[in-house]
Length: 257
Image 1: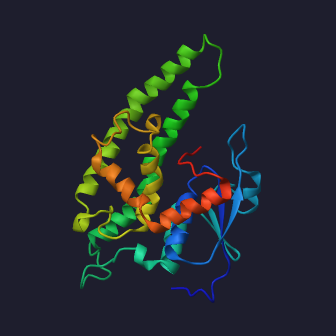
Image 2 (image 1 turned 60 degrees about the vertical axis):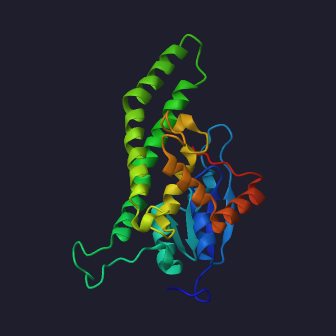
Image 3 (image 1 turned 120 degrees about the vertical axis):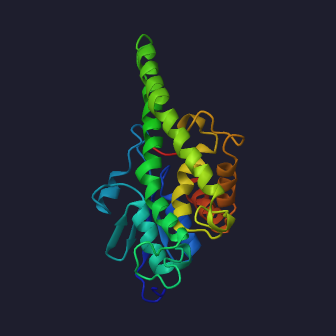
């Protein structure tokens, strides 16, 4: 584990209305010194500030720089920073006496590894398709074209999004019910980096943005998911991260492009 004295300056390159908030929460949780460099989206296209390409060739956020090292992709950033500065955010890997054996990993660790990649690999893909579908529906087209765009959007939602949302959020509800030690987190009784990864899409769909999630996303249909979102929001490090964004940006919005 790295010490504060031998660690180069850590900078979070934070883009408004993005998933960078998870990394800010992580930095607050692990308690290492860092600075934030903020970037704005283009008000017309909503694309990221081109200046981000000087930090990483993809020009996206979040990006974390540590000296000359530039880390991109949320899961990689969470894993890297947790390994060096926040090992408590990683569940114990091996069952007693099973070090290095195939199948010797703990249930908590296997959940952690799964959710670190499930978030962006499966769940966020659905939310992004939902965003595109909504943009098609609300596109500024002539009035006689609107029935066509509405029909396209409706078919995407009914034929693809709704059944997949139902599958994924039912799965997550069941996973919370079966969490090790009774939860309240996905990997057990302790907060992990995987919870931080899942926080963004879970808070999007439980925060009144119903058109970006399943049509039946309510406390009655998914009580454990709503309770889980509230548990995450109660974290003191999460609250500090939100307060920092409000101070920097004037507001904090759970939204994405």
